[in-house]
Image (cartoon, rainbow, N blue to C red; front, side, top):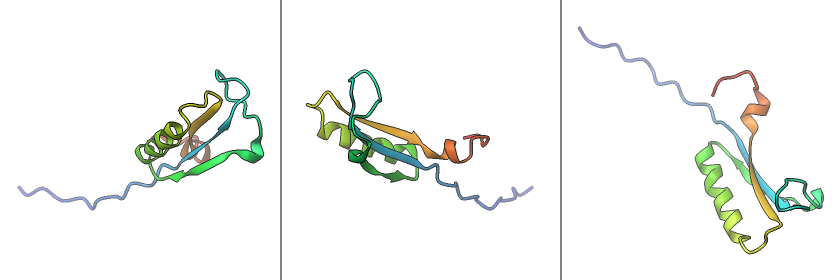
Length: 83
């Protein structure tokens, strides 16, 4: 019996935002000046966001008060959707 091929369903992008800036305390996430945040970009998956986060973080490795984060935008946009 031949197997039926299901059409491949394209994966919807799981958007991630990468940004950073100077924080008031190296242990926290309270940014000093929101008008000076460095918006690195929005990425369609975690792997690409992680690559961008690593590059931005590495560029500021000598500044303990410079912090970059990855925000899972898809979780904010559709909080009830499973990943």
